[in-house]
Image 1 (cartoon, helix red, strand yellow):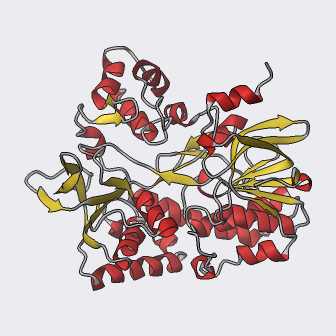
Image 2 (cartoon, rainbow, N blue to C red):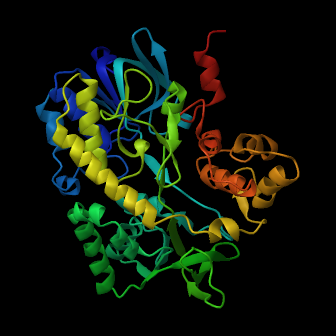
Image 3 (cartoon, one colour):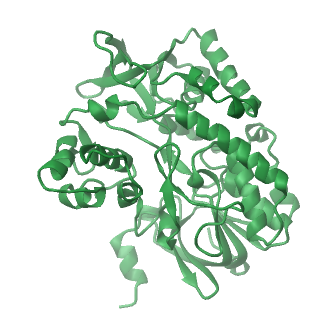
Length: 466
């Protein structure tokens, strides 16, 4: 789409039109700022409130009035199909270079947006971990399976196993059942009952717990088995997925001998939570840390301000916590970016929701078998076809002591996905080979990318002065 001239500058630019971004844009506009909301999709809503070609269904918003706020308070300019590629300082503000179009890697149109202040609400994507057979056709990330359903009405398989860990497995399975798939098994590697060890967090999470019980009831109505402390340890097939090998795990996340069984399926929807999308934050030099779930997250203060002046963070970038938390963080960030006060009640609400999110992360850690028992022949990096063995050899034989050196020695994370799929796993395997915990530098080695949106060299050449 062509950007109108008056939309080239804003007091506050919000990047990302998911729950956090919509809330931030509404709050900033309500506080009197000229707001520009930028998103790469053709419709607002993000990954959580994902829309297909039909008009947005307000029922998807669970009563959150962010769309209505956008209409009522200044109607921020919405730029869809704008993929922010880079962010750079521009005087006392910021300059954002956007690739315009449905697919940034094929677009030849770019435009520049300028703003005094930024709220980055860039969201997260599926966190994947390698295991034998994970590169077979028919093995998909849970978020990818759900995206096909929500955006295009496409069912990726008819006989499905849903596996991994975390509460996201339940809506994935429920969504598949709703469109007629046969879900043979939901395998949860941990025990959700562990949440009872966090009574303070549970006390303030009634709505989330009721939502989870609703999904569980749907599984029960379809007689879909839900098995805690079970995991898919291998995907089976030649040209595509035919079945999965399932095993029980002990309370430490290790495989229990003699508990293997085979479950036939043509689709495995698997996920180990999400990892924040941080390219723009890292371009700006924002401080980061290892989050409660082991992923790299952005540090933010009480008003969601990052370590870089005039830049705020909201949503999954500060730690994956779900849409409720993202909306509250967006509200706080939008107010602060517009120079408006933040009510203490909002701060308290965020603290409560973050406490529950951290409790869920504690209950659903990455199981040990995915690190301790990972065969060396399994591909760690599918783009560059680097096996796990090569990552370990870079440490044991070539003297690498951190993930950036492993990346240089093995080309892990240097292919098409630029570490988005393999980065977390490669950092984890590297740290394990070094005999230590995964560190912030390990994760940053795969999270830092000079461009946040795919761009051809030809396009860059046309833009650069000769």
